[in-house]
Image (cartoon, rainbow, N blue to C red):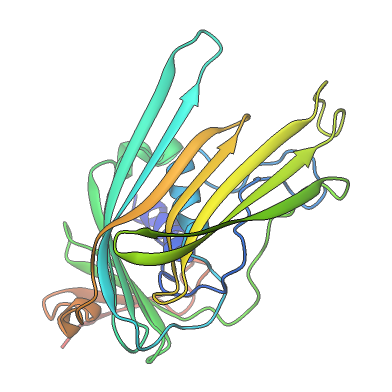
Length: 271
């Protein structure tokens, strides 16, 4: 079980710890391998989780001088062939300080084949670019996994080479008190590309705040996976307490590599 939780923690960390990092480029959500064979991303059983990870941007600069805290809400709606619908909603608390440190707190529900071990578990993810480390905190066991910040290139899913992506501007509007810029991107998978008898259109709508350098609202509709919506609410521009970006003194800290294996692992008290 400990081994499984460490793997989950590493994957979660890669997906969410770059909370305040954003290049401003449109997000990619199509979920295809570079070869276009329809292979799904790891842990794709949790569509909300994968979608949140894409909105939080693994790549990009550290955002300084724009602190905030907010509630991140994601919802997925999947329509089944018998007419029924599956709706999942998750809520997370997110924070960023003036130095670009980020924190995300979320209670995980269903994570696919790991649901029996992770359901209801509250996890906290801290990214500290100043110290160059990531932390995954488990509140139930008062443990923290410490990892060096990822320095290599991040994998990127691309649509099939014959697909065409069209992007259009949606102008500007005010959402949650922020001036945001909207774009809509449409990816078309041609008929026959993945065994489909008709073209498939995947549409993403994204509203981005240049001032805060975050995505405030995002909508994604993929006929293969359903509809996903991500939004920030209750945005507070005040500086979050610095204690939020530190490991509590009564937590046991273990150091790990990104592979989650025993290499470089040791236990220590966090004094």
